[in-house]
Image 1 (cartoon, rainbow, N blue to C red):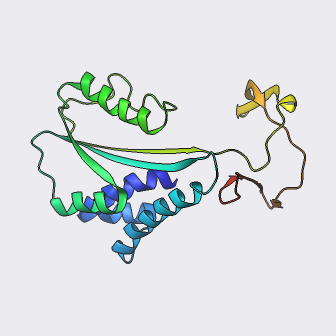
Image 2: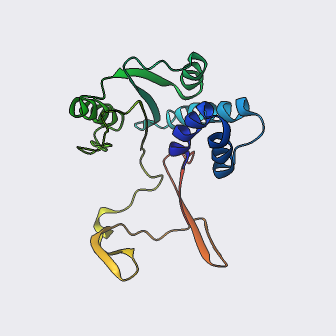
Length: 202
């Protein structure tokens, strides 16, 4: 996903040797590295611009932060790259106080996602000898182009795995929509308000 790729692309930019080669192979990176990072920057800016044209919608927010251990000296060219292309602000952190560090990171995440994601690191999930934590948040809140009727929402089974389901409220709608049925898969799209963004189900 684009959100996770931003964090991985920053790690890739700082990697060297075998680690760098393996990351490039796994992520499909190659060629002009500046173009790679520039592409991520343009995607973020395009998302901001497209979402801001819809009245009442909150702009797409792709936020990145570097939590860096105190006294750890990182290369300034890498920090400059992270700031320029990913708007990733560095913040010094005392990781030896794992409780306070966890709280600080979680509070940052909660603020970026309007409290939709209050916890990104669980209690005990941070090592006191950590040196760098790269955190990415993606927040998107936009109404549908055609709203679902509340009266048609009803409780039905949602299958979380083969043979296992949970009962959840499901929305229903019947109207013309983009849809394709190919060998082995189906695809459908639901536009958000303004039709600049689509929810794609495969």
